[in-house]
Amino acid sequence: MNRFSFVLRRPIQLIPVLLGISVITFLLLQMTPGDPVRLMLGPKASQEAIEFVRARYGLDQPIP
Image (cartoon, rainbow, N blue to C red; front, side, top):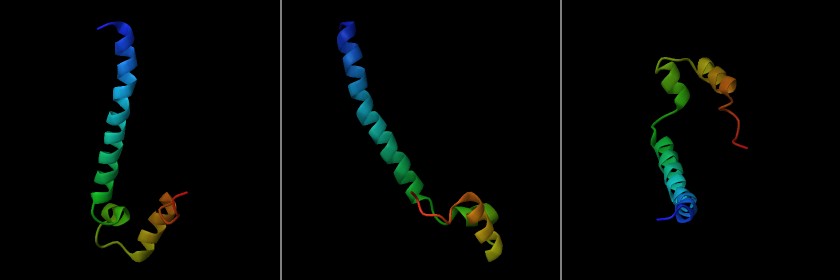
């Protein structure tokens, strides 16, 4: 195998690997149960505390 074919093949092989990693990461994040704020604060957190943390981290805003 010469160097030119190696250099040409590697970026082409990188595309499906990056796509696969992106899909797996997306699916794992979508499968996590519950609200991240409720997980951070615990089940006994008040509604005011939950709303404060959501506003603090921008979780109450839509994704641009």
